[in-house]
Length: 151
Image 1 (cartoon, rainbow, N blue to C red):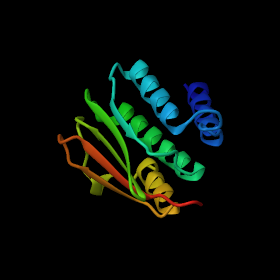
Image 2: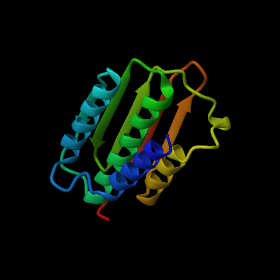
Image 3: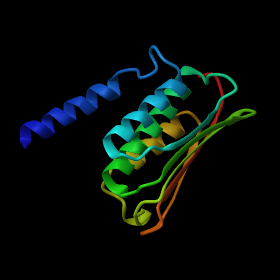
Image 4: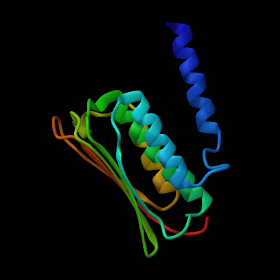
């Protein structure tokens, strides 16, 4: 058991260090994530991506990491069977909305995990914001609004 946990931690750290968008676009990377999610969960996320042009690299990496963490959380905790990922660019902002129909949770009691806090910190670092709407037995909705700017 200890070796398995250590291996998973090493793999997680390595994936955080690597640049997921080094050779592919944000759209391709999101499709790869959702395909991986489908393979591991059997759930095929409904995905809508509307980008007029590729966002700056730092924004794209942050968006990717937020989606990655959200799908990881859904896989581990939500017990969902419907998931959607919507990424829509309009004017000078990108809106990301990720929803699931899982068991939800009491946001005020979620103080042990670093995932939600990490996503919020990533968004703040690029002048964005994240709101999470959830309640027990009501699924979860993550909404991120990220201004488009060169960083």
